[in-house]
Length: 133
Image (cartoon, rainbow, N blue to C red; front, side, top):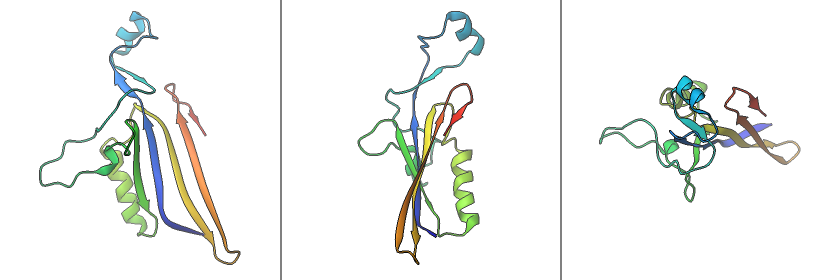
């Protein structure tokens, strides 16, 4: 089988807020950071760019949404190019504590059998550190 074209990596982010309605005051003061609750309006985020730098579309919400973000991996590019793209987004904080889930989607082609296969993997990221496939 051959992986075709692109792989879409999509994340759903939660709104980072200072109000933690479900935590008592003792826990809020112990952790000292905001809550990363699901839902809300997230909007654009990411590193600040200079005027001459191209914007990174992975930090802008998918059209028609406020908390869904995509980036595309060109799987036919050399491995070091794909690895550099992932490292760049990782270094710029594409995924962080506000990430609720991540999914990967792509398409395989089996030329001999004339069969296309779509794959989809989704990982739910729980605040306690558990990753649910």
